[in-house]
Image (cartoon, rainbow, N blue to C red; front, side, top):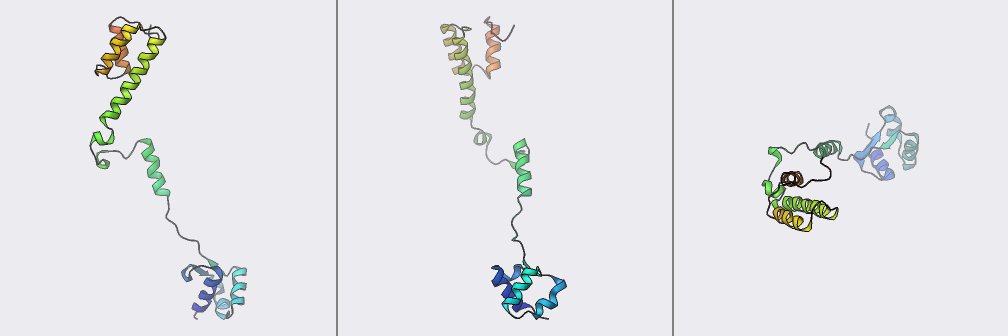
Length: 152
């Protein structure tokens, strides 16, 4: 029993490709006897003929990988191409640390923890790269005898 013509007509009616046309195996005989488009339309209304869903690319695996990357996984040595400086440039690191240190120094000057001469001293030390971080800068201030508000 050949149903190629029926499939072609169904494809035209359903506005899809021939390969997307699905015919219910239980009603194959009735569909094979359908000769006119009107018969095919009836078969579609009865649910004997349907258009298969369009297959897409599943994003499940991609989303799972993306989720892992957001957690910080999948960043090992094997995944890296480019030097450490290319991935996190020295200049960017420096800018982040110096801006943070200068912001803290400015706040300390404004709240009266530092006098302007002390501020200038620590500002220049920070500029020279003497401090690794804000915590390092504050411990050095503590060693030099400046009491910082949060630490008692």
